[in-house]
Amino acid sequence: MKTEVLVIGSGIAGCISALTIAEKGIEVTLLTQGEDLFTGNTRLAQGGIVYTGTGDSPKLLEKDIYTAGWNYNNKRAVRAISKNGPDILKKLLLEKYPVPFHKEDDGEYSLTREGGHAVPRILYCADHTGQSIMEILSKSVAEHPYINVCSSRTAIDLLTNHHHAMGTEFMYTLSNRCLGAYVYNESKDVVETLLADHTVLATGGLGQVYLHTTNTTGSIGSGVAMANRAKARVINAEMVQFHPTAFYQGTRSRATRRFLISEAVRGEGAKLINSSGEAFMHRYDPRADLAPRDIVTRSILEEMLKTEEECVYLDAANHVKHNLTTRFPTIYGRCLETGLDITKQPIPVVPAAHYFCGGILVDEKGKTTLDGLYAVGECSCTGVHGGNRLASTSLLEGMLWGYTAGEDIGLRASKKSAISKKVLNAIPDWESPGTNANEDPALIAQDWTFIRSVMWNYVGITRSTARLNRAINDLQNLNRNLRSFYKETPISRPIIDLFHGCQSAMIVTIAALRNKKSIGCHYRID
Image (cartoon, rainbow, N blue to C red; front, top):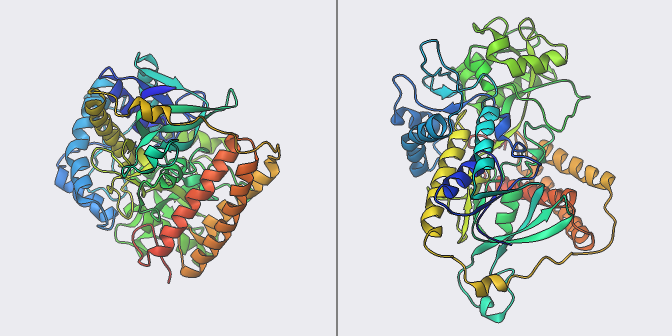
């Protein structure tokens, strides 16, 4: 199949990109792994999205982003999001695709504050901001005549003329270009060849390669793994942000995804306490509970080691002035399901892998180092986050770069097809790697447990040369076995995910070993 633009991923970045391109009358094919557009991490975002507050300015937002990012940020990207982000948010999410953000009695938008922010500047919809955004965007996508949504699709590999085009004339070209992707259609159990003039990766993060994470099951770094294989540049892969407060239900509960207790709870005044009921964050940082996430995460870890406890607690009942049942209805309801009433009891919390600050290197327009390939959202690295992400900037970044990538593609795609028919005709259909029906769910589950344990123990919140070397050896051995298995076994979604997950775990680990300095969420104990 041939499409003008192929968008792989259906979160805020993918949807905004698709809508921006389609608004120019350009055909877009949008892929989602699930049956609808609600399978990614965007719908899980509780806290909110950065806007602009009273006494706020682009310079003040820049300062907060730099501080959280340990001044490891890309200055051009920080300037772009601070200057243009709020204006584009107003244009898109307040006017064109109006999201029902919470308002005060006088009709003005409510603004909250989270860790690392100098002023309240965050728009929110109670504690389900991402869900509300996706409800609006998914409806707009579904109704747009120029967007074709393909569900139950998993991208296997990016197509390039260097790697896939058949014919000697393509062997000797200096420039490499992305031409689309091989895509697994789960509902029909076939691999489709999707050719495209422009391809946008919006595949999200990689939290699922860790034992404890707040991410959805599809967040295994597939976009990063595919881009890396296609020789697009990946940077800052060691920068994995751990959220300090994920709901803890005991060691017996190793859920696929841990429920997030939003930073907005601390933003509204909640205090972290130990098992003795003592607030402890002031001992680790003068900003106490509103310190940036990497500092809060390591402080919690140190407090747990000091007290020999399995978790710490977040006390909202005695410190938040709002009605917790209406300000945080999702959190209240989820905790109540387990028998915990957050209006009366503190919430047990532990850190969990949350956000990937690194990714596929892109410029201010979302372009990667591979011609024809764009990346937006969490799988990309704009450089906005540097060493650590400032709270609630991820939705803004995904929205802004989804828009700018869409605008840039719109200018290029409106002229003429970027790829000649000769090149497109030189791309072969997928050939099944093998016929041995030896896929064993128990073995795949064990391999995932192995990857997640290695990453949590050796490439987690604190790292050392010895741990990282051990992780690389373990992952390389598994990767060799998976490559052999991959060549012999008919393709399936579990096999694709496992293959991508192992590769993205290796990318993070190698980057962590190479970076000898402790910066932000990459913390070396040696």
